[in-house]
Length: 399
Image (cartoon, rainbow, N blue to C red; front, side, top):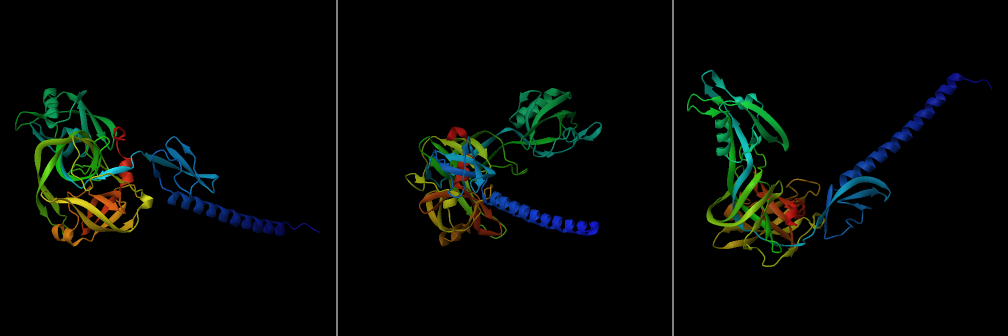
């Protein structure tokens, strides 16, 4: 038989085409399988005590603080962080508290121009400073207050200074020379800074074993920059609730109160998942005894309760809510949606108001999390944070 080059070429093309389709199908199936596995397997898993088995559906090997999830028990798919929660019982609180917060470093909240004999100038802006930057030192001298920064600038007498700064947790140096202001004859750089703040929130839980607590369910952020404020020190005080501004669509409500002068404890950490600290004595709480905590996998849609304080005289009260949706993949403070169903609470506050952040959420007799945010367009609804996520971000010294 005579060899036909053209027929051979066409046959080869068909074979290659079929092989390519099969290979592509196998590749697509693999990508979809691995992609689905990666999507549905969480980035972190919390376990009680020293448990190693975290899921019946995943074959894993525990190494250090991570587990390796394997497809069909063979193919490694994803490394999952293992958070070991040592304390499984906590006292739910619901008590409103006040915070006096002092920053580590000073936060730049505005950059302005200075009138000098040579015209308007802004040394800080020209040097590359931005709103939200945190100044921690000037020429090696630590600064934590407005007064300390102003003294360093004045003492420079216009000589070049080196400012040690933070921006989005990244360290950098900024060099600038202050200008002599015509208005008051003082050296200035055009920086407006903040070194403290104060506010009220709600305690989520108290740990009677070591006197620690957590609250808010979100971090304390600067009102102008919205950046998380670095904590130098913080004082916890009692609050007397003086007024409630009822929330309505588009305008969140607010608890108003006056601070007691007596110190009740100290803050030790300010995180995206709440504030943590140590109390001098056990606070008023929703429960007299510790209760078990629930992991995300145990939380379900349906009835639940929140505990919060709206009146100093009547104290902490229980209110009915509904968990309307759950997002177990979220790594923010928006793990589930809380819908207020208790008519008493709706009548008094319109729903969730500022100051209620941190209110503990109880379902099936277990502490499942804390209220964190209100939905501005519907104050009867808000977000909640899983208690395991709050505990997973707890400072090491509090474990």
